[in-house]
Length: 288
Image (cartoon, rainbow, N blue to C red; front, top):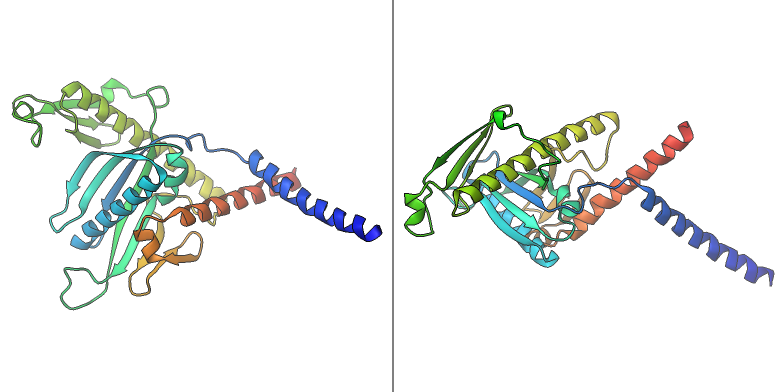
């Protein structure tokens, strides 16, 4: 009987430990942006033509991941590179809990491989930058009309003769930050203006988040990292068929990333972030 009671007590202690951990996770501060849609921006960095090709490869990975998550993508702006890929591309990603997952992709992605344009077989190092901006409304970010200049232009491309005769394109400049947005996606000037203003609000809000993250990372060292654009988060090594996440000090199979199977990487970032927050909470209790 005593042995049975001891065994039950051990089982209950294990269950209590698991329940305490779940309760602690529920008490952790939530990111208010986690449920929002995002504006995803991919830009070629250093590395010339290969950087543009790499930016295109990252886009393909995120398209595959979005498909598995049931998210929808819409191109807002794009500048194609001469040798393939993109100089920059901005997309709207809509669906369930988009920001909570894609925010871990923000930063500098470095690739080491032999480019298709390399005749001597030498390994090149190139980079592309990913920014993930949660969508915000006019209440969250207020823009003073005096701070913007807006001009219109004729839009080229698909859509028939009308787009070339009517000034539907919008060129928006935010004077305090120097942010410039040229929007041609919609067929009416009003819709392009609304879209340009939405993109500007998202960029300004993301700048505010960057400042907040920088302040937090200055106060405490984070294993996950701050998620700042300037931070190198991963290196993709073709020779070793490996992805190294520098925030986690862990390696992942390269082909799984290229196939859009990045859930494990994201889950690992979330787990480390939660662990760090729990440690911070425990430290606060001890110091109180």
